[in-house]
Length: 145
Image 1 (cartoon, rainbow, N blue to C red):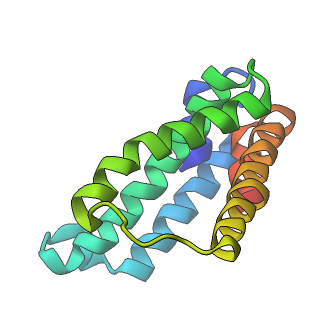
Image 2: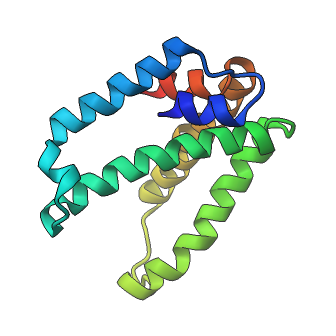
């Protein structure tokens, strides 16, 4: 689906017949796995499957928006912005659902959290934006699958 979204939205990633046919095969494959009745009849049992399909669609939009609006900025700036923004958005949710943490964390746990945040997440976003600039949004999403 990303190829169709990118092909319709980005000039440098045109929609070709091969990409369109590939997207159709992908949609058909998902329909077979999920089951046609889940796509025709809406019930709460099918809600999880529909949410996953919607998430994949929005993931395609995210790649196109990142290519269009963020490719001119340095990759470190993009990674910092995404991580800062997501942290600011999640803090109220955490406080509402889990309350303010009262336990102090040990030095090892703090070091582990910082290591995961810097090495795993920040470096992954820097690579994400670097691949996006070099290879395009559609190839970026394929490399993540």
